[in-house]
Image (cartoon, rainbow, N blue to C red; front, side, top):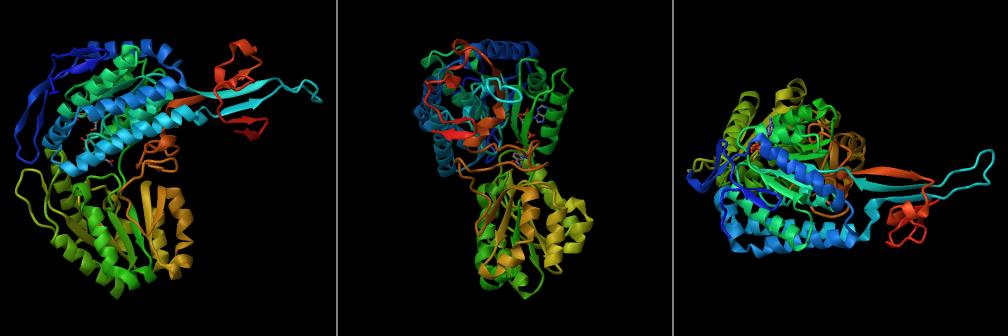
Length: 523
Ligand code: NAP
């Protein structure tokens, strides 16, 4: 299959007539065919109308049907074969092995959601049977389940062209919840988006679902994205990208006559705390692990370690020396887009104007080559200067040299919200780390020890979220099976006759799902 340059509205392939999106190979700077003409507002409205029409029957699909649909999408993506990987390599500059891994992750998370849907625990069934004899007042019959919100808009992310784009985590979790999805394709990888979109479209047809369950829209500039978020039929938004973009969409969603939730994952610098004994025992090893994590994917991970905090002295100096050497030896990697590369260069310049340069990596030759960079600043400078907390999206990082552990804690307290916070610690550091923990719990969605924040497992316990600006809503995750909760809401049924109750709430538990009955868990 080759990309055709079309949007997908329900079962139709639609060629827009607005400004053109043209993919650029970031390694060579060459434009890639075909062109993607953007859609107008009428086309956006048509996709939302179809999504709304599909919602009535899609929300009623059985757990089995919905799970089979998710598995069919995974199969259709795999069936695209090498064409998908080749197109994604040309559009993103990412290496083949990374993209093959990402395809595996994308299909794996669709299958994980299929198993979650089948098990039905996400329905969160609660039954409080009537107590007619209760004194002084009887209790009525009360039953609760979770239901899907309605059509969802997903903004594909630039930095995960498969796992966080058209059929990525946001789409998989919304479809699992029973919500039709209208995707706003990211302009950086249109061909990859169309190929995956066609795979989802094929799965919709194969599974006999209403066509509006899925649409994929292209639009240059902001109009298509803004129109989607403003459309009264859209009931929630999933987004990964810049803080400015996330905030603009949040403002639009809140200004609607009916405001809706926006789950925007935006910026995070993922602090790493080097505790004294660990630093003394293994400064070189930690430095090597840190630079490997920093360079992963040219630093274009939302969990990239952009801030390292230690107590100044010979051990931190040894760390800085080893990390500086590793950074100097880092080859330049191609960044995803000229825009992201430009923002990185600007961010590094900003850091250079506020902090001391420790090392720069090798300069590359292509138009989007990322030169790694490491800086250092004192704890007191960090506490005085908010500019040192800005996300530099790419392989750039800042080491903070604190006076003592108390200042390390003060730095932790001054941090904005984060996706992750990492502790590098040995056994003797546990007491020094203990007072940091409650601070980090308030700041981050995931606290980890003796690892690196890059590499986010897709599983049931994962939290990929965190207080603002890491996300716009810290109560949820965008990775892992708990992501489904973002697109659901609880409904309580009071005294409904058995014949009217949803299947999952009937006395004989026909769906055989786990339920909380009168406060006790029944398998
Ligand atoms: P972006 O500029 O925020 O764009 C993300 C998506 O949102 C794109 O589809 C874009 O449309 C759309 N969009 C952006 N602003 C909008 C607005 N005001 N109204 C409607 N739609 C809007 O992000 P990006 O292009 O992926 O990367 C730019 C920067 O974002 C990076 O340099 C980095 O700083 C940050 N970023 C952070 C993360 C993270 O996980 N922390 C991940 C990726 C990027 P178009 O396709 O038309 O541009």
